[in-house]
Image (cartoon, rainbow, N blue to C red; front, top):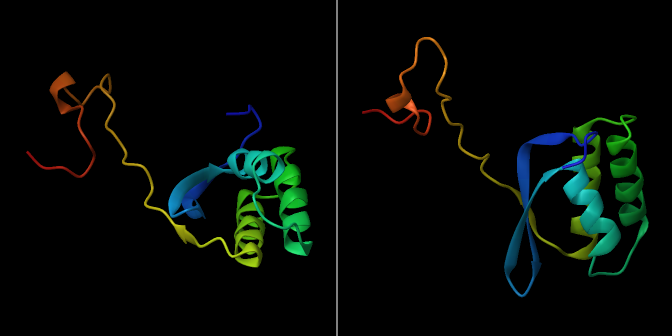
Length: 110
């Protein structure tokens, strides 16, 4: 991940080809895909998405603006995009009130 990369609060799952899904978690992920792997015709929304993601990586636009532009480019090209479940959060050991045996997925009861 780039030092200037901005993660999205909600990853985006896109069906890219032959039913294969790919999850995008940040502005840099989307920009890399747009510039290096985009499989479809490039239209106006594609151009806007590239610009928004470049601006996001450079700190000139928010992650959400870049995310929305990326979604629009996907829709323009017929690539289904849905919000993916965020990755699970894990407790970190080392916190004074936690024991080493407490390291497990958050929200899971013993």
